[in-house]
Length: 326
Image (tube, rainbow, N blue to C red; front, side, top):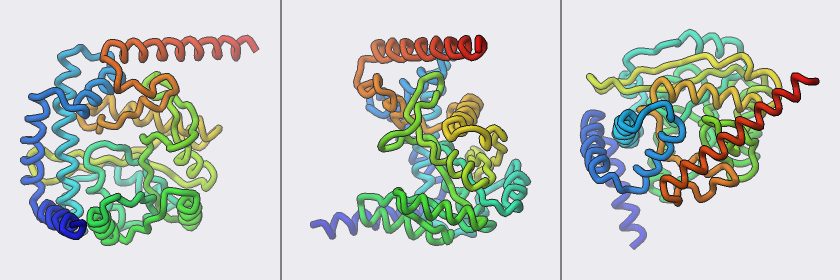
C-alpha cells in the first residue's frame, strides 16, 4: 500500500516537473481563481490577516486587491517550483531574462570572505539556484521532506546544482561556518520562526522571536551579504533576478541588531512589492501573546495586534528618553 502511494507521488511529481512554466502558471491561476472566489480557506484567511497587520496604510479595497494578487502569485510560484526542479540547469538559466545588480554579487564574491545570500520567501526563489551555482559552491541547510519520494525528487534537483546539503542542526551550522571561512556561499531564508529561543526583534512593529543565525554567520565570519529575489515576467516564461546590497550596519553591533537590519530590509522589499511576498506563513505566532492569533475572530485578533504594537512603541519611546537623559 505504501509503495503504491509513493509510486503515485513519484509519477505526479515527474508529470508536474515535465510541464512548461506556462502550463504551471495557468493551472495555478485557475486554482487561485477558485480560492479567491470561495474566500473561506484557512490559508486565505491567514494571508488576509497578515496583510492587514503589515500594511495598515492601505484601505480595505486595496488590501483585498493585494491579497488576491498574492494568492495568485504564491500558487504560481509553487507550481513553477515543480517545473524548475524537473528541468536541467541549462534550461533554468535560460529562463532568467535579466539580472539587475549583478555587480553586487560578483564584487562580494571576489572579496573571498564567503558570501551569505539573504533569500526571503518572495517570488520564485528556486529559479536562482542554477545561476548562482555557476559562480560559487553553495552549502545549504536542508530539512528532509516527510514523503520519501518528494524528498528524493527535490534532492535530485538540488544535486544538479552541486549544492552541499547540510542538516538543520548544530552540525549543519558548523559546516556552513567552515564553508564561509573557505570563501564559499550559503543561502539563508530569514523569515522563519526558530523552533526554540531566538531574539525578540521587531517585524512590522511587532516583536517576534527571530533567528539570529544569519547575522551571526555574517558577523563571525566577516562574510559579505546581499539580498536576492526573483519575479516572474508576465509576458514570457522567464524571470527577472534582482541582487541588492544590504546596509553595512549589518556588520556592526550585536547579532540581534544584525537581525533587525535584515528584518528592515525584508520590510522594505515587501512594501515595494507586497503582492509577491508569500504571506501564508503564520509568522506572528512568534510572540508570547499571539500564540492563538490565527484562531481568534478577526476583530479580536486585530485588537490584540494593535495593543502589542502600541505597547512596543511606548517601550521604545521610554528607552529613547532614558538613553537621552544619560
